[in-house]
Image 1: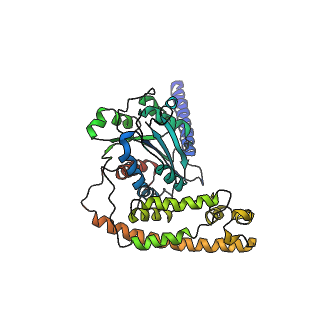
Image 2: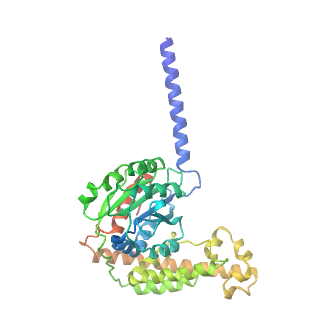
Image 3: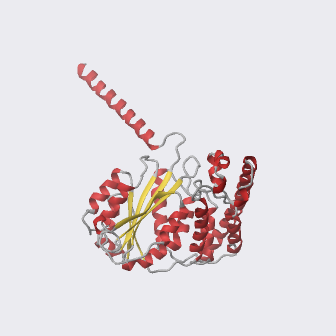
Length: 380
C-alpha cells in the first residue's frame, strides 16, 4: 500500500511539474496583445565573385517584402516584419572583425534596408561563415518569444568551414536562440553539399538551397503597371515629414523609388505594392503613421521641422490636414492592393511553366513559408 501511495505521489509531482512547464512555455510564446514578428537577417558575401548575388538581392528585395506582407497570424492579424543586413568576405572590412560588418540592425525601416543594400560593393576577401553567423546572433536584438519566426539567410560560394569560428558552434548558438539558419550556395547544388553548406542548415533545421547567382531577374510587364506607378506618385504626396531628420527621410523615400526603377518600371511597381501594405510604416518621420499611435506628435512638433505648407497652421488645422492625408493614403493603398491582385493573376498566367527556383527570392520565400508553418503563420 505504501508503495502504491509513493508511486502516486511521484506521478502527481510529475503531472504538476509538466503542467507548470507547459504554462511557462505558453507564456513565453506569446503574451496577450503582443504582436508576432518575422525577423530575417541577410548575410551576404560581398567578395569579388558575388556581384550577381548582390544584384539579385537589390532587384528582388520588394518581391520578398511583398510575400512577407501577405503572412497572417493565427488570430488573423499581420506579423511585424524586421530585416537586418550584414556583409562579409570583403577585403575592405577589418580583418580583426572577421571581415564582417553589420550594415543594418533589425529594423522595420524598409527604405533604410533598400538604401544600405544599394550601397554594397564587392571586393576580394576571406569568407568566414561561422564568424558572420555568430556575430549576427550576438549583435542583433533577437526576440525571446517562441512565437516569432527568426531566420538567418547566409549566401556565398566558398566552403562553409572557413574562418576561426567553427560553423557548428555558431549554429548551436542559433538553436539556443531559436533562430533558423538557412544556407544559400551560389553554385552547383552538389558543391554546396560537399563544402558543408547543407550541413550548416541541417544543424538548425533550416533549408539548404543553391542558386544561379549570375542569372538576372526577369520582370514581366503587366497592363496594371502604369496605373500603379501613377498611384505611387500620389501616395508619396501623403507623407508629411516631421522632426530633425524628417526632410532627409522623405528624400530617401524618393531615392529608393529611383533605386528600384533602375531595374525597370515593373520593379518600381513591386516597391509601390510594398508601400501599400502594413509592412511599410514610417512613424519615426511621417506624421500620418506617427499619429496612428500618438496624435499628440502632430501638435507638439516644432514648426521649423514641419513641411512648409503646415508651418502656418494652428494645432487644429494640422490635425485636420493629417487626417485628410491619412484618408487619401488609405484610398490610394486600397486601389494599389486591388490592382496588385489583378497583376498577380496576370503574371502567374504569363510565367506558367517557367522556373524561378534557382533565384534568390524564390529560394528564400519557399524556405520562409515552410518554416512559418511551425509558428502558425499562413498565407491565403
